[in-house]
Length: 257
Image 1 (spheres, rainbow, N blue to C red):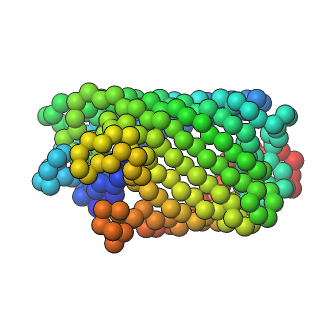
Image 2: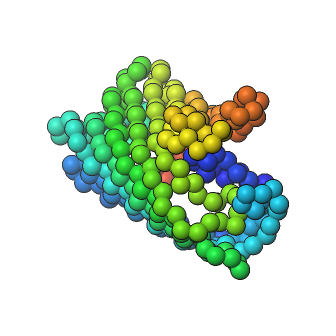
């Protein structure tokens, strides 16, 4: 009830009511040369009540969503013999930090099938550099991560709902993380608009901006975030916090510490 959906470049939309079932599976493969391949599979079946696409009218309909996501992370410049196993020095991270310059590519394909309406088919492609400095072991400024991806969307059909209609506007996706002191990090993410479509859309404008502060430790993380609504002069937006626990599936491969 009243669930906000993060649409990335298009901001946040709202589901007024919904119920259903979701099945999700993720696999990650990583070798000693720091090449990484991720596979995501999703199936989502439910009944939703939300605003009709392009209007403020509420509609209710069944929706089946099937999605596959592929990510490949190719190292370009990395240190020789990078560490693989976590040690007692990694007090601020549940995994070893992969330093260096990488090229990350994503392919995301999905189909949205609606009750008594045509389906929406989406293919999203993104690619760009990711650079990480520091091992995140020292007390201050020992970790910096920057990612910049160009996103391109191909779409067939349109959604009957506003909350899952995909924008095809060209854009860049930007993410930034910086250790300040100890376990405290500053995080920032945004999209950069690459098309001046109308009076409300400005070329080079930052959209869906999100700021955050995070305390990150090996076993857990606590963060607060803010996604202000720029159009309302920051008087409204989304604000909240997250709490994560790590290493439930620890296999005991690395030495005990």
